[in-house]
Image 1: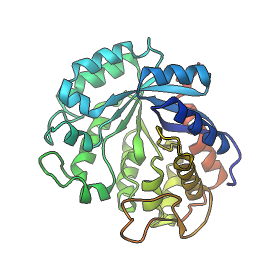
Image 2: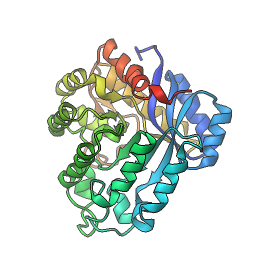
Image 3: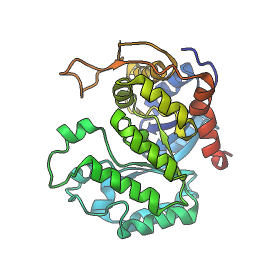
Image 4: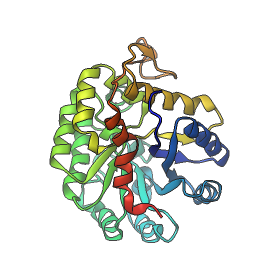
Length: 310
C-alpha cells in the first residue's frame, strides 16, 4: 500500500481479549495507531486500557434491540454513568434486524420520535458524541427485510435517520457505514445531507459493502470522496471476536485497495455473501490523492474527537 502515515480507525468492536490482540496486531501492520473501540462489555474495556494504554478512545455499546424490550429508561441510567465508567462516546446498533430480534413493529420507538427524545436529550446534556447504525445495504432490503411486520423500506429508514440529524443539531454524530448510502445512486442524497447538516460525519465501514458499491462507478465515487473529504472517517468495522487473522486482514486490505490504488477487477479478499451467487464482488480502486487520504485516515477523526483524548 502506498500510504505510510498513521491511520485512525474510527469503528472497531471489542468482544474477546484474545481476538483483540490479533486485531491490534493486524492494525499495527496496516499503520493504525489509534482507534475508537466499541466495547461490548466493561471487561473488554478494562483489558484494552491495561494492555494498550493510550491507543483507544472508548464507546459504550447500546443494543438497538434492548430499547424495544426494556424501554428507554435503562439507557438513560447508562448515559448518566458513562463518563464515570471511562467511556468517551456511545454507539448504538439499531439496524432493522434489531426490530426483528425484538419482534417490534415498524413504527415502535422510531429514533426521530418524541419517545426517543429523552435519550438524545441525555446525550446532549452530557455532551456525548454518538455513533449510530440505523440502515443497511440495499441488498438486505431485497433479501433479509422482506417481512413487513417488522421491516419497512430503506427510504423510510433513511427518512428516520435524516430526522435524527434534523432534530438534534447540537449532537455530534458519526453515522456508521457511510450513512447507509454507499450505493452510487444514493450518493446525491448523502451529498445533500452533507450540504444541509453540519453535525455529522460518516465512517467508511464496512469493507464489503463499500467495496461492492463504490467500485461500480469509481470515477463518480472518487469525485464524491474528494468533494466531501472533510466529512469522512476511516473505519473498518472489524469485530474482535474470532482468532482468524484472515478476517481482519481481508477487511483492511480491501479498504486500502479501494482508497489508495487504481486497481481494476480485483476480487474482494473475502466472501461477499450478497454476491456469492451472482459472480462475486470486485474492487475498482479510487486512487485518492494523498492529501485526501490524510484527512480520511487521520485528520478528520483527530479533529472530530479532539476533546475526547486525554
